[in-house]
Picture 1 (spheres, helix red, strand yellow):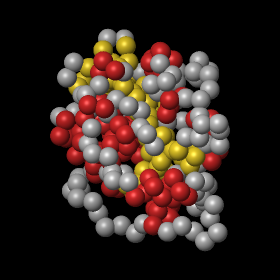
Picture 2 (cartoon, helix red, strand yellow; picture 1 turned 90 degrees about the vertical axis):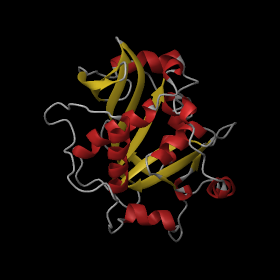
Picture 3 (cartoon, helix red, strand yellow; picture 1 turned 90 degrees about the horizontal axis):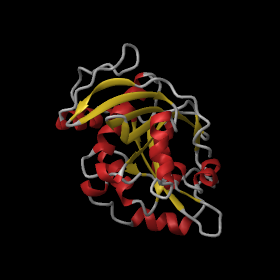
Picture 4 (cartoon, helix red, strand yellow; picture 1 turned 45 degrees about the horizontal axis):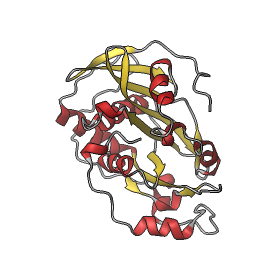
Length: 262
């Protein structure tokens, strides 16, 4: 992946959180203002632009549908945290989903920024995808900070969608997934609890739901139902032993001091 091969839209100021300015950066991954953060420490952001990302992408049960929406927190002109939420398409069911990722500079860690920005990015993504079915987080198994954030966003472990790279030092990527409405309600709770109020550009932000934040009863689409049973003849799990171990391992406890991990 080359971090300089992306066109960058103009960021739009949408609000503040404590001493930080919040921006809707536009659609794209390594946009101009997040490029320095990502390129500055590839090892820290290995889940986002590490060497094994290109190896794991073809193995996933989904493919990228549209470029992700990026939301950042900035101190002056420096991006100190970013989150992305973009639509993906299930290879098995054709259902539309949203994949969320995030990263924070070390000096801005421990402030819950990854969780807050992920909620904002998801709100922007889901606003433009009314037929969205599921929400996904994919991360290396050892990245406990990222796994804790996925849990905070109301996503559940989905080991049937785990994948492992086929290289000299294999890496297991674990999956978290949930229905769009459960995550939507949770994001509203997160932002309300943090006192975050944003002003989205017209046509680029979410419409505030007037419904209760209680998760509604809904009929699960095939992309979510697949979480609970392995389809007959499926080859979805590349590493049964490691995926089973991940499934039986206890969920990581909330780690507010490590939520900067991507």
